[in-house]
Image (cartoon, rainbow, N blue to C red; front, side):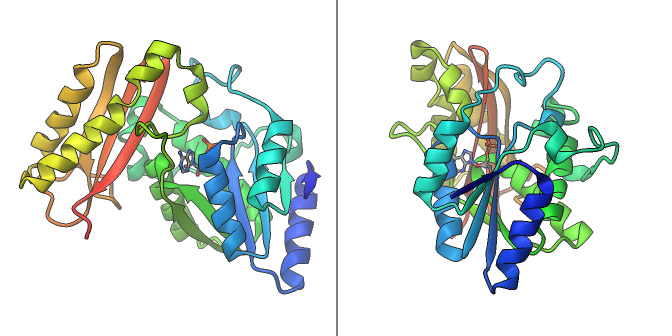
Length: 283
Ligand code: AMP
């Protein structure tokens, strides 16, 4: 597996692979790779001949009070995870490698789907995400690009970005990988204290309670949202940010779950902000 840093090398390697007839895959990450990332890489390796994993802690998607400085960075361990999962190369640029002209003055803003939920709580976050994803997809060229359902709103934003700009990527969604107690794997889980770690599965428990309510016949989005909120609020170390039932494409809250909807929750556990989501009403 190759390790590359320069953006022109990424473009060249992807062009070269395609010229040789390879299907090319891209797995964008911020590093601190865990089994969730590995599942994306394995899926990419099973569907593509050449798989590039990008490892870049994107400063554009962090707010001024967020954890950019303390975000975990461990490239050596990431290389081992990526190699084991079947990556062909890891692209780990510095900020200057990725944007030689300086931080982008071009901002990719995806509109309505970025204004609520994570976008409501983290102003500018999705502009940062969309700008880096557009940069990476521009460099990679025609490819399959793998994203986790763990960050469901991000997946919706990327799908819309690719659609609106006619980018040459086929977006592939991968299911959320969880700990045995339901906690969705996240690089930020490492920041949880032992007691916070015990409390953290409350997000997935809230989603499970909502699914049970749906299975028992509840269809009102607001009621299902309140059920999730009550579960999270019952955990004293958790501070609810939102608990909503939304349309899986527009992310607009649904009055009634008639076909598939998405359960979306976010909460702070101690100082760590966690998000989770699940489908409801799907066959
Ligand atoms: P990140 O490094 O957090 O930016 O995540 C990189 C990619 O991995 C994103 O597409 C995430 O949605 C995905 N991802 C992160 N955690 C998980 C998980 N627990 N299960 C599946 N995919 C994940």
